[in-house]
Image (cartoon, rainbow, N blue to C red; front, side, top):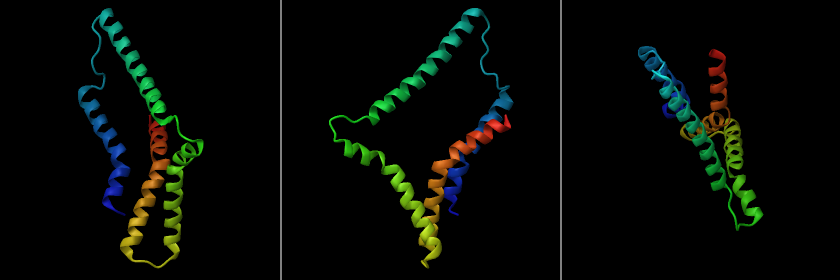
Length: 133
């Protein structure tokens, strides 16, 4: 397997590991409020942060909505990712049964591993992370 593919698959775990080391050495608590006023400000900042995430998702949704375009164009646009996944995975399955140069087969396998990680990697990693905690 290509080192870049392995690196992209292990990058989320590595960043969480670094974060865990930093939390271990710093106590992991972060800044603690010293009085009620600071606690209120901290609570307001956390609420603003959550609202910012919601606003970001709303903005992404609005960007994805294209107006003044035929419905069939929107349908084709929405099917681009699933179609690319299907083509790459079908090519990988076919490459298992067709004789081809090793470099080409390795490239197809790397693309297929990236697609599988795109489909299942993040969700699987988050589920495993929840099970550990």
